[in-house]
Image (tube, rainbow over all chains, first blue to last red; front, side, top):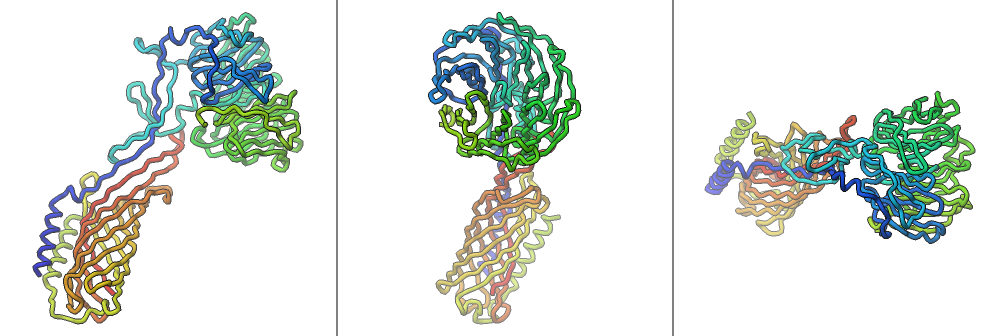
Length: 421
Length: 200
């Protein structure tokens, strides 16, 4: 009985020690934190000039201009690459353009965004590129601070923190000018797309040109700039086109604008002020779009960046641009960029590489897969029709293939980005 | 309410322990073949994060072998609802080491026990589980065993439990707010436990 008493006393003492019986809990939480990026006007508006070439760290959008391949290094600038021999591309200079993510070239003039400004550079001599004009505040800004300068962007950073479970954080909150969110998407979609391509065949571009005009899309605006050969550029219109706008693609008097909620078709009979003709809506997803004139091909992808859960290709009849009609949807893995050229449809499927379809039967695309390569990650593609070359960007770099035999591609070169070495 | 119920249970167990007489049945049938099975119902008492007292409930099932007249080693499974309202529960695999103060000829015996285990948590609030991480469990206690009939003994036990369970919340967001949330709640549960069960 002494033992029982002893046990009882021991545990009675334990009862009195609340701390020994109190639960604890820590929450390991991963936040997306958006830090404000301030740039002093005098720093932002320093004249851009060519500097010595440097290594590609992160692959952004690309643009093909003659024998040159221009590669955006997100937020830092543009690499100028001599791609005359696709089997041996050579980096020849780097253009330091803070806040750059998009680009387009016309008549030897390079148009590039620099946070809220549009800069125009003379690209005729890639070794001696000079800034010839600048449209200040061409794109929406977030405001300014007297001391810190212009608030030009919010930069996402993933932060993992540990705090007591009893502290319940909201989905999004502000702390000074810093935005915190549990969401991986709610703000990034309005900022810079991580990578992509610009050009006639490009599908994730935010800049495109037509009839002496540069059209740009921001998160919610479509702007038109009138271009002069001497570089002087004037913003002639800007209009709200919805929300979460992602891409713009021109074809035969039309602008196809991809947003996370649908595809907008704008006519440019009045080039300086595009008119909305029709809308093709879909569930929320990212959706680059290309077209051969009669048919629009839209890839929808879901996931962290794009919300939504759709991963498919929508084939849409746009013969009547005021009444687009879905022909068929095809499930895909995680499609991103795409290109249509001479009846061949190229689709980048993220970490499952590239697919090539013959579009002779739009109702049976899935039965007409000509080629597939899963050995690399593919985000977007430019197709050089004459040389039958496909330039594909991915998280790991840039791949160049010859597809003279569509069923058997030949690898020409790989430019690896340093981030993914 | 919970606190009062728990105190009543403690009182009952104390009175029950004092009422046991040592001059009853012999020998202990469960030890004849040097093996045992033990099923236990457990009640745990502790303070949740906000300081409120909580009564947890669960059950355990173990099997073991005596490797000497007083020592046994066993293993089994334990389930416990740590916070019934939110359905926070844990399932653990454990092994226990038990030492009996008195030999098997006695009708009632005292023993000390320690177990170690590893558990996985689940919660009614989670949209799915399976991605939850594993967490350790430690327990030590003392028990009294009273022979009821030839092959069955009644066991009462009191002990202290620490259990770490990790709940991963991967609830998809709604609307524009978020696509997906991921947080890992690392709980450290501390409970004083009272168990009653049958020793076969």
